[in-house]
Each structure stands twice: as C-alpha cells, then as structure tokens.
Length: 304
Ligand code: SF4
Image (cartoon, rainbow, N blue to C red; front, side, top):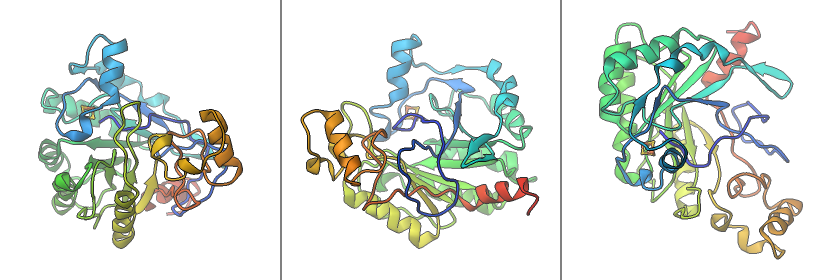
C-alpha cells in the first residue's frame, strides 16, 4: 500500500499528544519492508501511485511479485533511538505493494504473518485498500488467538466514498477482539466528513506529493482532525504534499523555492521546511502515536 510522501528517518517525539518540533524530520514509521512487490490500482487514491512510477523506472514493471527471501530478514529490525531512548521500531509493510492483493495467496500471507508475529518487539504496520479480502483473511487467522500486539492493521480511505473500508476494521474487532486499528486518510482527495473513526486507534492524514499532485483542501484536513478528535483517536498529519498546496505558501518571501521555504521557517510559519510541502497546521505539528505505542514503551521500562 503505497503512501504519499515517501519515508524519512525518525528523530522526533513519541508521545501521544500534539507537539511542536523545529528542524527535525520525523515519520509515523521508521522503516519499510516489502514481502511482496508490485500492485494494480483499485481506486482514485491509486491514480498517481508513486510505487508504480518507481517500479516502472527502476524495477522493470509493476506486476505483483512475491519476495520470499525477505521473510528471513526481520531480525535486522532493531529498536531505534528517539529523544535519547531506545524505542520499538515501527515497520511499514509494503510501501511498494498491497499485501491483500488477489495475486497473494493465503498460504503466502500465512508465511508473512508467521514471520512478523515471531518478531515480538518490532511493530508492523499493515495497511490495505482491499478491505474485503483483508477482513476475510484476518477473521480466519486471528479469530481464535486474537491479533498480536506487534501487528497493527489498517485501511486506506482517500475520501468519503471509501469509508466502508474503515468499517471493516470495526467488523474485525467484533470478530477477533481488540487490536491496534489504523485509518490512513492519504492522500486526502475529497471530503472526509463522513469518516467514522470510532474504535480506530490511529488516524494518519496527508496530501498527495509529486509533480502532478492533486491538492488537499484545508477543509478536508479539518474534517479528518475533527473526526479523529470526536472518536478519541490519535492523529498524525504527515504533510501538505506539495509546497504550492500549503496554505502559508502565498505568504512566503523570496525568489527561489529554497528562499521561500527558509523565509517561512524563519518566520515560524512552517516548522518542517524539508517535509513534502511542510506539515504545520495553525502553527503546530500534529504528530501523535496511538496508546498501544506507549504501552510498548512502558513494557520496555518495566511497566505494564
Ligand atoms: S493499492 Fe497502494 S500500491 Fe497498489 S496501486 Fe494503489 S496506491 Fe499503489
């Protein structure tokens, strides 16, 4: 499940609250891992899939391929350093594919999750647009034993038309019990006022990046934030996607893009000048992680 905005190493905060950070690049995950590669498009959020562009340019095509050799390398995902302490690494599974693609058999999914579940102290964030297949598989796999705490499961819904994908997460909770549920609202391509984040633990939102990116309206982002607040879900705003789509861009002074970014940064109008289009909303960053992450940290410190 390709996400807009690419990947940045994390050196930022880990607490579940709104924070203001200067001069850092942080990410809602630390690493990516691709046990499959390639995909096919299912909805408008896929139209400008960066994974497809990368695959066509550097990997000879975007058709789905299994990568079983990847299943033995998970021990390499060590904890990371954040704010002077070692914290569990969050691994985004399949930045170049969708794990629940039709061409991935249940038997291969079993091998992927057997490998993931054996790596207890690493968090694996698995996000899909194929909610029906996901729900079928996940019900069968975790009905008896529940979803392990290091497996975070999510869907991506780019506008209200695809909110049914979020319902699938609640249906799974009904079937298998509590787990960390993620609603990825990326790229935000239209109104999301009807997104229901009840029982969702983490909402991630952001605009589309790339030269032909479709702009995210401020109103749609506000809808996502409001829905997350109503539901008590943690929220992470990743970025505006492109500088031209950041509402403070018209205020930037300077001739070149670099000068404009520096100006916004120096005047405190944008706190992350190197992110994709900045990630500041009304003078602050919103970078919260779900309560499950704090429980991981507490476990490391000897707490519950
Ligand atoms: S599901 Fe994700 S990886 Fe697949 S085409 Fe859509 S955006 Fe790309």
